[in-house]
Length: 426
Image (cartoon, rainbow, N blue to C red; front, top):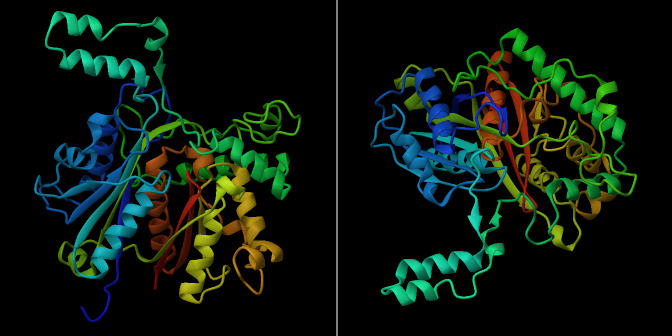
């Protein structure tokens, strides 16, 4: 093609998000992902339709889910001819899937695609340690009674202790929350400001529910109709009573269960297409996915684990010639209130913008009234791989309701990575 096509964002659909080990404790990633995609199918009349590609994934998954995206498609009302692949980029999974699908639409390889993600820690894979696992393999391969007995030579009961999955960083042996505590101290982020951001997130999400904003974005699943982490009755006084969740010994810990996202089960999806495909199916375009960028930091060497979005966004702005203030909405993933506040402070810092981002001037401040206007992960929860699709669906609807405008998306991920995107409605 001589020119790139615009990537139309048609809309999103997700199931309600629930705290892990509560209302979805019997639901698998396959169950939830299928439900989210079926919600999209119902919303946009896609039953029997062959979609160009579905890119979806989960961060915490069983080995049996090696073909998760394709199995989910086969469990929905989409045409079984729909191709699907599984992708995983920690908390940026579904936004990265949207970036990949969007690029294929732009060059004409695809006419339509669905980006999606799911996660559950209620159905987490529990495995044995390597010593006992090797015994089981030897047992399965044994050809005689003696070989079967030999497989358990030297066996100890301690080998039966299962190994649960962890969200900790393999390189540092620290959890994401512990890393974010370090960031909060480095940037001087106060506990009161974190609690205020968390409180505001709950209040804004509750108001959005009351106004009906989520009515067409959320499809009921397993008898659940709304996010069960949302606390509209939360108060700053209650938040102030919570003890530190990660730094429990220094007396200076500021991250709590109230200003951090909980382990969450859920799934989300979003439909992307060429303008021609959308027009042929009579589907209005909410907005256009125009630019995406990834970045990483060397957190092992001391950079903040969750600071990569500051770099990804700076690169996006350089790509487009836009300033940080040239947006009507900002969706900044609230992994922790402290992460959002560190990000904002970094963009305002002349030293950081000069030394790390290579800029002559700081990127500057953002109008707080334009950030996460309907709440975000602190209020509704964070099923790791589903968050990108949730945010993209939210941004599309925000711009469609406004009638025009530009939105910036920023998502931090495990492994010291960040994903950013620009969505526009001319």
